[in-house]
Image 1: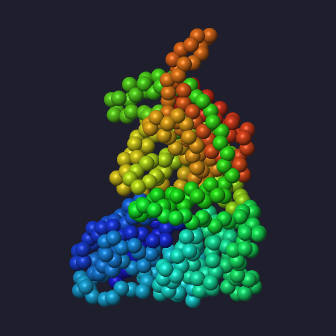
Image 2: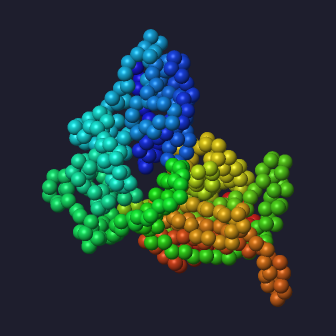
Image 3: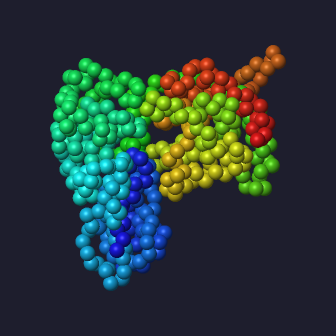
Length: 433
């Protein structure tokens, strides 16, 4: 018998919602068949069968929120249909299941067994601790010790609280922190000193509405980004007249192929080529260290029902405008229909957020960590410009780079924007390479 578990589809994922079963108990399934639709913190995906056989049991109803690693069904021979009880864990080893659930290696066997057995505290008992990025095991241990995770610094990725961060409080080598002590002394993440500030409480009026998971997760990530990344912003105005003429000519040539290049496609290509010349903007900042990204993978922010998602075009600098156009349209279509794959939106090295289609003059965007910059793009507007001493109708667009001051200084950002401008004001360069 094979146990089907709620899979871990991302570093921050701790649970998934089982939206719809695509197979019923008694159905024969083959390896790779779609068993159910699940909603993660980012998108709706299909859960596939890892073995062939019959769907013998289902343990989670449609609409149920299931922790990762928990059994939702079993696959086995036909004579086992409807037999057996819900397994305590997946058929994998305790260590593997523990890593699935927590996202971090568990060395001690008793800790792994605790996760496998489902020994996690009730939600009401850990309401505050659930707000912080930590594995279920860490949250359970903190709750048992009476430790408020809001007063603990996380040393894991993106400030995640891992077991070694709380071990001194568990073994008694450190006294449990108090709110007063935390306010008096800054906590440390990586090599940076930061001060945690308790979230304010407000009197609530009105009717509560459901918040989509993707909006909630995006909000949490952006709060982290603005809290820990020293943002600053540099804007540049670009004459888009030549780019619009170039786009018109390119689309006339590509019309027979059914390809229509957008202004955003030109911006993606221009940014990708600029990143070739300014690789320092194509970096990641993690735990006080800078990492150079060799591939230039451009994330495109896409609005969909319930929130935003940013799939990416890999190696965008190496792709033609026609290919970028086709890929961007395909990603946008599948993002709105729920057909993106995990590997298409988890990653990327530089993000572009374009609100030009909404007639927005300019805006600033929040950095998508661990990236060190994000480009915000406004609309192309007709404006009077002076050329050769005469006033003419021109087309201007404002772009703004939000940069991480730990990784980039103002001169670097200004130089990058100048290169983006050069490509867009001389768009024939976009067709080269």
